[in-house]
Length: 260
Image (cartoon, rainbow, N blue to C red; front, side, top):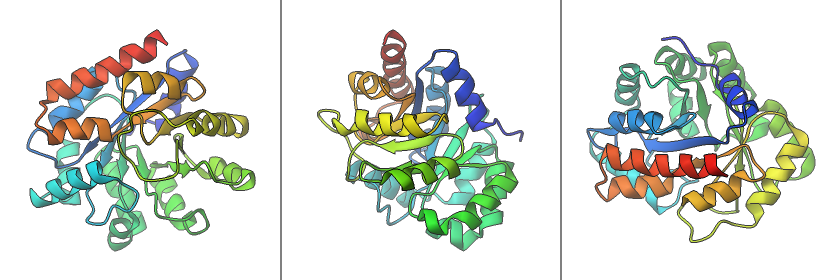
């Protein structure tokens, strides 16, 4: 399958005045998860993050942990998820999110090539430190897969610049210290994180962690180029929401971002 260039795609939409929306779905979470992909794309997502379930998702909070475990209990495997993705054409970039254990066991080049072969344009592997990720980044670059790096509110300025330089596709700003999860309010550190990143890179800057409502999305995108939304959507899926329901939730976020 031909790959969509993640950074080029997001830059074009951003430079056209659009705030970016990247929802997340856990791969293998139920028999209709690929229909969720389609619903998200139809609802106005600019890219979609697909979680590859792992038994010890150290960065993730209770909701994503539950979604990952349920998918594993249903028999989800990386090859099965990749095979399903290969059968779906959503017309926007897909970004895999998983942990280094799966990448290491598969092998850097094989994992990167597999992503490219099934049409996945990017990868987030949050537990590889910046100082140790160069071999993976090179393998991903060779395959045409963008490695998206994360930056946190406590990242020093010099390290922040290095993260932005090495990140591909976009830079993922973590809105607060802690794990993923729904929040009642958006952390004030989200705006600070966005401003710091925008000061050192022209790459698209997206804010995630705790973006739970359309209002949160608008607030987070005020200083950033857009948002990543995960736990709020996966909670709906875990509670039995249909693909149409998830699409509606994404559509609500899209309309709020467009209205500003």
